[in-house]
Image (cartoon, rainbow over all chains, first blue to last red; front, side, top):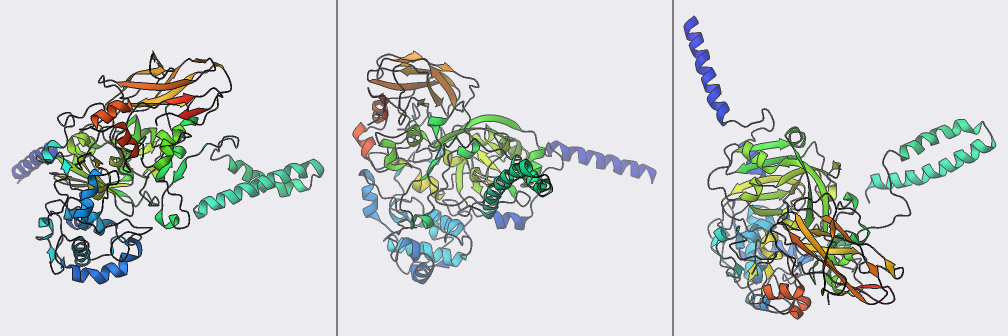
Amino acid sequence: MRLSKILSAGIFFLAVNVALAQAPSYSNVGRTPTKEEIQAWDISIGPDGKGLPVGQGSAKDGAPIYAAKCAVCHGANGEGGKIGPRVVGGIADTETLTTLKPVRSVGGYWPYATSVYDFIHRAMPRGQSGTLTPNEVYALTAFILFKSNIIKEGDVLDQNTLPKVQMPNRNGFVPARFADIPDEHKRGCTQGICP
Amino acid sequence: MNPKQTDRRRFLKNGAALAGLAVGASATALPAAAAAEPALEKVDELHLYGERSHFVTTVRNGSINNPERRLKDEAVAFGLRAPLQDSVGMITPSSLHFTISHGFEPPDIDPQEHHLLIHGMVDRPLIFSVDEIKRLPFVTRFHFVECHGNSSPRGPGGDARISKDATPQETHGFTSCSQWTGVLLSTLLKEAGVQKGATWMIAEGADEPKHSKSIPIGKGLDDALVAYGQNGEPVRPEQGFPLRLIVPGWQGINNVKWLRRIDLVDEPYMAMMETSRYPSMRLDGKSRWFEFELGPKSVITRPAGGYKMPGPGFHEITGLAWSGAGAVKRVEVSADGGRTWKDAQLHDPVARKAHTRFSAPWTWDGNEAVLQSRCTDETGTVQPTILEVAKLWNADVDFLLKTQQVVGDFNAIQPWKVNRDGSVQNALV
């Protein structure tokens, strides 16, 4: 009995030691969040679709939602208004990028369709961000992309199809490879200016 | 103006009126002294939070650009610029620190309710209260925060920057420098245990649009800090209260205010700002995305645009210099349009990735003169002329001046022309 107690205490001591070796340096500062907490907070969506929730929507579904919640700021057809910038725009906008007045519309400039979902979800509508359901966000994304001639009216966007949408300006950014981005010296930036 | 401020101002007025009454009363009749006592207490209360002299009136200019207010007031300015022409030393008072919040008002955050979550590719996701962050080892460092569009010919300030009448506030007011206190982000990341393959982090704010920014993890493990203190007091609400990510030397957009979440990932997440607003466009239509480090820059703040020389004679030239690559090593000043240069004196503290105050003696002979400064940082990089910037952009100067987009990271030497009548004008154009 006594021996087993000593032994188990020893084993416990060892276990604690091993745990400590991998443990944080500062005891009892910060706590482990629950899975639910992380899920509730984590709204990031990657360019490959990581983080996209279950749901779906088409431009047809999106039209009435856009009219009700977005048109007041962004204009009836996404042309922009006094409060919200232009969101609809396709190839024609992409062609302005070499001029003195480049147009950076969602349809004509943004390289990733996932960013459209991410931004609508996190920030829109102004003053009521976070109130749209995943289905509504998919539908609004589809509406903007349809109006920009990027997808068809009946195309359904979801976790799988949204990341596959090819935006007109997808290849308009340098450096093209993600791995080449962080090293500004390799990029040839000099005197604070990148080529 | 929030109700509390309104109350305070009303109280200030009442307090002052009562104080006047008290003095008058005590001079005429003693019995009134009893009634004056509460007023005196209020007068003491007035001193609990200091105010500057009412003779000092320098303020920021511009607008927070709230589009809902823009409907009533069509003057569109993109953010509030710091009045550099009135600055002394290298610290920007927190109340005058530039601010750009893309049209949104700062959130009103109760620090007891605010938390910072670190998760994603870590061994141990962690959530910290603000008080817990304050229990950890901290650093206090001087760092500038600068908008990537600061001093761009058509930057966030619009045409004001290229006007002949532009002041340093209009040309360079989107930079400010503070003494920041906080926990190195590397301390928090080590607590969470960065996993192999985590190459980027997404920093996110608790503002209404929940601004998010992808940042290479190397910067997070280097000198980025989670600041709760600014210039000896809590970070101000418009600067990110209660927690702000400070990313020293990098474009302002990375310095996420109201920081609530750091997500470790394996690629940039292509957030709205970094893919749609902040890439700078090349002549061939391609956009440079994810530019980070700001180059060496300097500006003479006096005598400068908008200043009136009192007359010929001695006048110390002074200004600010900074670089995202490290400390300022040298500042040269020219009074003859760049034909000859003289070393300026650098005033302590000369800190890495911070504004550095410089000065140089000058005696004005009453003739036309062009004043300019040139910064060299600790890596030996020299601030370029506008011709050199154009060359690096593979464009001509005319393009830089005429394009309707922000010329990001524009750090050309700023010339100020001193006219015979003593007026000083912006001579970039």
